[in-house]
Image 1 (tube, each protein chain N blue to C red):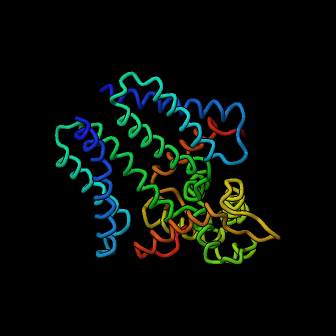
Image 2 (image 1 turned 90 degrees about the horizontal axis):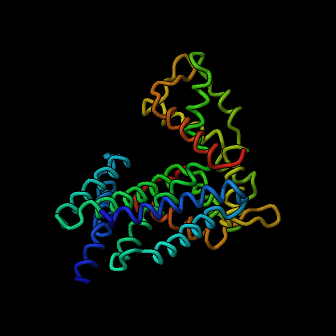
Image 3 (image 1 turned 120 degrees about the vertical axis):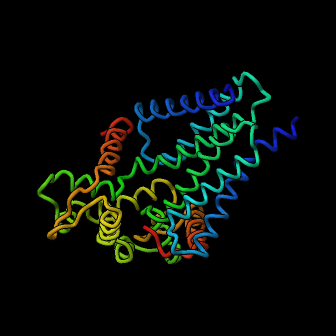
Amino acid sequence: MIYNQSLNICLPFIALAVNILFQISVFRFFPKTGLLRSVFFGFTVGCLAIIFLGFGTRLIFNLLVYVLLGYCYFHFINMGQTARRIRILTELKACPGGLSVQEILERYNSAEIIECRISRLVEHGQVLFKNGKYYIKSPFLLLVARTLIILKQALFPR
Amino acid sequence: MKILIFPVAIFILAVAVHLVIWKISFPLKHRILILINIFAWVLVFGIIILPDFSQSLEFIVLYCSLGAAYLLSYPAIEADSPSLAITYNIAQTASAGLVKAELNKMMDDDILVVARINDLLSEGLVCLRSGKYYLTPSGLFLAGLFSGFRKLLNLPKGG
């Protein structure tokens, strides 16, 4: 009984390991797949692993835990890809002698951040570039931005 | 069903405790550490009042997964996402559109980079000595973790 319970509780973690291994393999060996698509493939394979390995035994519980762990893994990848704090930490790691604000800004600055983001927004069809100006193309990110503003007003002091 | 309801209810309690503490006295330093402490203490409370002790492992696993997802999402809410800020600023101009020079003026180094350096300082991930920033042991661990993983995936510098 205890053995079965312990094995069952491990299933989401086994599925997460399958997810990570599959995602890394797909992205390493088929880089043209793209990072986001490899994450999606890895997540799907992990879902299938949980369904086949633990069919019938607390499927909803295991799936819920797996989805949450998969979300954490996605966030981990996303942080490495887009988080400014992680990029600053990486720049500091490369310079054990330390960096002043000016030296950090020579390596990583607002111009680079805006250029990188705006290209991504145009590429993904969120923003339209026409006659030297940017316009909103899809309302999706705008909706997310407005929701976050409301959340921030509720959470943080002004 | 009980196996799902109790951990979710205790998680909601932890979120409520977080919101109340943030409203009463917003911490200026070590916010993530305080958040981890809130979730850990509410977990202990949950274990004490757990109706069926044989399900304690399930409770801990589900509660910790919910907590981890929340803790990872929190910095994204706290720090302004440049992509969302760009989208919002463009939307504010309606049909007039926005040129890149205006965006650069709205979002300068102080907002996008220096504010994040100050966050790292307040979270204890970097320290400032004689005008230079250095990684603390926890900052070094985090930087190593991310750069190691990105090397494994053959990815260039992020950000």
